[in-house]
Length: 300
Length: 216
Image (cartoon, rainbow over all chains, first blue to last red):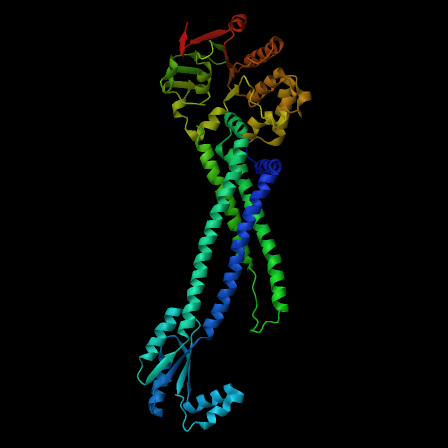
């Protein structure tokens, strides 16, 4: 039984790429550029996400106790707050402790507090949250729950800052996905057109192939391989370029002696790199699929 | 081997073929003869399923072509070899690669392809042109290569559309001799031509076509 060996279509695909080298190089470069932008976005998104997670993990709700609440009621209040869903720990800070803290934070300016006849600071609970309880909705819900508790005067958790940051982050994510999607569509369109040009250049040859009994699969396979190879090459080039840019950026960042707390900058994980390669291959395949579908549909 | 029953082919208002009924037995060498526009090429196109008839039935090797679905079309076409007036060789490929194509699409192994192509090239006397490109060959040589490509996979039927139309007398004679040899080996040949002299010289069965109709 005759069989179709794989290397033959691969050879035909490579021959085609060789004979239209410039066209294919341009296509690979465009796929590479699109994937570079996408991968760079993923790197930024991933790192911002990590920072956000760390900041969110540090978020504490401070619940101020009303004036005149005695120790017994504070003990009951403490137990109630600890019992709320999502609370990891609730530490009671008495009015005196609060003043000591303020003094230590003010250091040299602590003298201004000496003139106070009585302690103006309220007692409070510093509530830290469970690690899975760091989304905006949960924090807001818990803060509202604490605020409604008897003997609690006010609740603070940096709401405005948190909302601003999370809104920006959500916008960044949405804009990134939309831009990335559009760029991918552009890449698919370009691959599709490259393959279409190759198809037109080989129109007579393809017609002869059909005449001598070539199956659609036999005709299509080299073009699919071309598209996939273009996508693969584009993805690898984009990852290599991104890695070089990333290394330069990180080395500059480390030498910059920045005033804020330094944090580790992460590159793409192996899985993410695999995803970028897969995305490149898919882009190439979809591009060739679309052009072949249109081109071969016209035939009998 | 080939039978048509009341076959019509219309292109809009123009009738390229009208009520064509022919019968060609296995191993026969038949001419389809008629002036330009008589419907010879259309008839051949219907036989290798380059197009479907508007009406009527065509039977090839006992198969009604209406029943050949799109997916099965390549396998049907492997039973038929087609030769054109303009050769239709692939200019970017060598003679060897052109001849190897019908065997490649059928999925034959490399060794078999090499042996078969070399054998066919020896038969047509062009084994020394194996690595040449079609453009470097004469018209007669190109047509011999085109015939070789049409028969390299041992088809049951060979359809030739004006195969000598672009050739000088000497080359035309060589091509006809080659077709006769193939016919003697058992291949059914249907050759379309406008050349009445060629037909009368051969003494073979003739189907006359005029304005899309057959006549006796």
